[in-house]
Length: 283
Image (tube, rainbow, N blue to C red; front, side, top):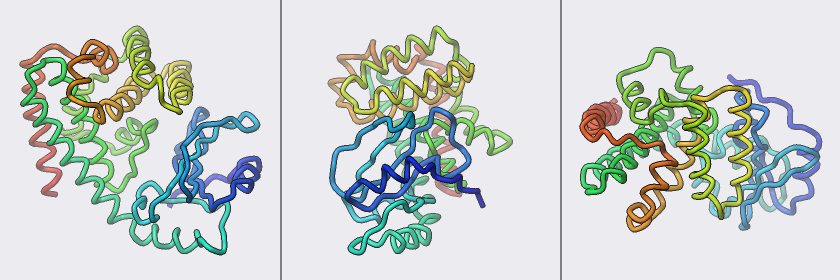
């Protein structure tokens, strides 16, 4: 069982001022956090998500307006900071703990299905750049699903390290990382990608937090982790965009995801990734 680090007093003090029930979630409920990781505060009320700096600590407020059962994976390992008589977080935490393993496994299968769905979009696409985009997105979905099915909650900044900790790499992991292109993680490549991703995220409330995290990884010379994380963030953004956007801004997407133009190689990797995803769903 993972040891849960103590919550800093200033984070608790800040949470106490929020007029709603609050829980700490994310990597700071585990031993996986890095210096650049924010404190994720789940606020159980409607509102706009935001990032702020309190006494030099970065805090991200994430609002949960629907029933807690809809966020079981996100709330896994939650640490209660502020409760209320009307909304008892202790009962929520107990329910989350009971449902967590099953919800994580279900999320894992959903990610593998999403991977296959994205691969289908790749095959159907008539635009080479957009096809390459869908393959890379599908590779991220595959790895996310594989981690969840193995009982590990995927955490964006730490996902590549979580994959490493799985031990011996399977063919599926190897082909997924090949699709993502982690072997191309150089400072010039990452710099070009980051500029494009920041343009994609220009209106997002957390764009500065993303930049701070990638800066930290680069300062620590964690190039492969930075490349992987940046691509994952871009993939999550692009999957929500329209086909019209993908076709219109294909050059920006190519830079953001550092896409390969070798169509024959991409087709070979897609077939291998498809087999791995289908095998994962059968397990």
